Every structure is written in C-alpha cells, then in structure tokens.
Image (cartoon, rainbow, N blue to C red; front, side, top):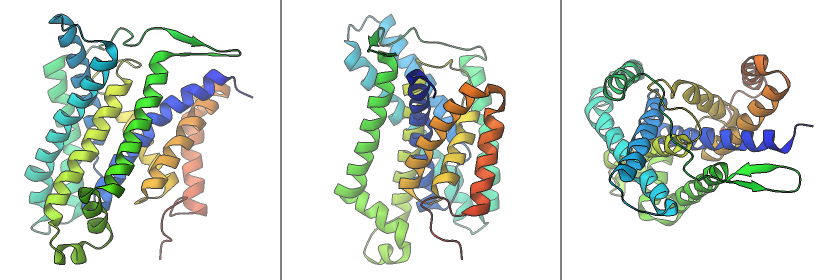
Length: 296
C-alpha cells in the first residue's frame, strides 16, 4: 500500500486535471470543439500568477498571503479568460460561421499552441521560473505530513469547482449555458444568444485553465512549455470520464491523478505507458467513458 504522501500527491495532480478537463468539456459542450490550446492557457495563467505575486512583492504591497494568493489567482483567470474570448471571437468564430468545419478550427488551435509558446518564450524567457513557497510550513499529522501549499491547492480547487456548480445551477448565465448545451436551437428561440454564450463559455474555460496553472505555479517550475503534459492528461481524463460530461471530467481527473501517482510510486518509468494502456482498454470496453452517453 503506498504511503499517504503518494495519495496526497495524486490528489494534487487530480486538482490540475479535473479543473482543466472541466473547462475543456464546458467549451466542447457549447462550441463543439476541443480547444487544443487549453494547455497554453494553463501556462499563461501560471505566468500571470507569477508576475502578479512578484510585482506585488517588489512594489511592497504588504498584503497578507491569504489575500494576495486568491487575488493573484483571480487576476490570472480574468486576464487569460479575456484572451480566450479574443481567440474565440477573432479565430474560432470566423472559422465556424462560414461553415468551414471542425478541421479548420482544429488546425487553427493547434497552430496557436506554437504561437503562444513562442510568444511566451520571447516575452518571459525560456528558462524555468520558480516561486518561493507562497505558503510556507508543513502540517504534521500522526503518520504523515503535508505542506500548506498543497493544502491550498486542494482547497482552492474545491472552491473553484463549487463556484462552477453554483454558477451553472443557480444563476441565469449558468442556466443559459446549460440550455444552449442541451438544445441550442430551442435556446435561441427563447431569446438566448448562443453566440454570446459561446464567448462566455470560452472565457470561463480558459479562466479555469489559467487558475489551474496559477494554483500550481508555486509547486512546479514555470516555463513556456509547461502546458503540454497537463493538456494531454486532461484529455485522457475526459476520455475516462466521458466526452461531454462535466461530472465525468471531475471523476476522470481524480482517477487519473491518483492512478498516475500510485503507478509512478511502483514503476515510475512505466507510469505513462500504463495510463495510456488503461485509456485504450476503456475505449475498447466502454467507448463513451464512465459518464458519457452511449455511442450510436
């Protein structure tokens, strides 16, 4: 049985995958596309968070960490979410409106991967950047210990997920999003602007990716290429949970993060091979994933 620290590390990884996968599925449910630049929005969110924290320290804004941390996270989500809205308006909408098909959108979002990575490399440099531990200290328990930084990652991920549940189920915007996702034609007949909903959803999805990057910025090194692996694993989480299922995105992210940590504990050099093999088995046995609709 792996020690408790391995399960905690897996839970921390799950926080990345479930947040990013949730945003990807949300965008897919409305726009009908997989946003291949999602990992780059994660990377940009980490950079925005890094500069928000370091700028506040350099200007000597003496804010307590329980204020500066969530404020920097919110700034990261707003900035990158706004960038996502611009991408949807200037690129995706222009390609989907004439009816070119998803192949063109896929090609465009794949091209944006290299654009954003190159732009980040020229703007921020190619070398790793790191934050001193934003929340120093360790919580000592009877059989194991956990850093306050990792506790913060788990707590803020829970806050983000609960907030998204409230937005989607208790607000007019959320109800409009759900209506547009289920029956876009009927929603438009009731006065819901599907185009406007698409912009909002793209902004929310990219903001979620950015905040995932911001939350993990004090834990992992920050560089222009850091979004590639989380993007791949988030896609695997969606396959496990079921494409189009928000619940599946969360459950798939948790399963993938825990499995990745446990498998790496036993056979670190085979962990990715085992995970991809698992996904292949799921596709063969249950192609729609755990919570996806049956494929006709």
